[in-house]
Length: 319
Ligand code: ADP
Image 1 (tube, rainbow, N blue to C red):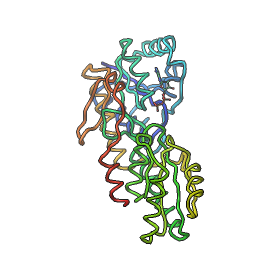
Image 2 (cartoon, rainbow, N blue to C red; image 1 turned 90 degrees about the vertical axis):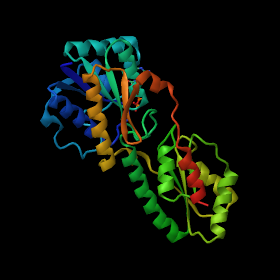
Image 3 (cartoon, rainbow, N blue to C red; image 1 turned 180 degrees about the vertical axis):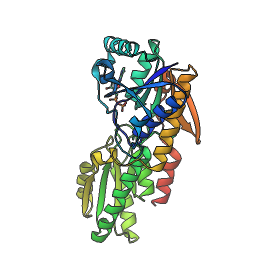
């Protein structure tokens, strides 16, 4: 393989730039040429493809977002769209592609692989919902952003003796809610993977208040229920002064943590190695701090699993 491409697709995540940098530098180190594809599959179809040099990725390791930009592209879900993409790759002499993104982006990489074009997936999403890896790039940064907010909200919550319901990202995966809830000492954590009951939530609040707690924090993943709804329900059955905070898109941005930069560097470099070994159709990951790779088709068939040990522990510690 002489020439590879790299793109970022789907929702952006802090650390994607560190991954792009690793792909470009690792490839050039081994004498390959690298082409950056702008705006995900949209740019691929439309030929927004440029050669990258060592300097193209200078000064980006510390930046959130993605310098290659990202976009959603419905057309790429069709065979015609995919054929246009492959045509562009061939036109530029690109023989392998690194796709950095979430499960939607992996679907695109899978489609290309099935049509004989070697792709390697790198898990880039704040949701931590890609099977085959313990952590995805961006999760740790998002977690720390949420945690910073929880700590700040806790200051005001305890000053005013309030209950706060904090809504965090996670439509289908509760990882951000779970990990930030445990790290932030939340009384209750609601995640899409587990059913919740209002009775249990009120019970926990009452127990806490009886033993003299000055405030309570409830973390709810957006995919479970709106935070406002929980607050309304609580106000019906308790006398607690309840407030809501919906964190929103701040969770996607910001300077990547050291953990995400190191993870992105390792995974990006490994993806290039796989292409050099002629092993397309794989997705890279990290399991027990070791680099691993799996069949991308197989990864897409596996369901995402929440860490139930952490879920149970959060119950024990917030008693
Ligand atoms: P993420 O990668 O963060 O999960 P999306 O689900 O929006 O984000 O997917 C990103 C892009 O991947 C889509 O806009 C589309 O171009 C491509 N994609 C998603 N699903 C498929 C599919 N089934 N086949 C081909 N391409 C897909």
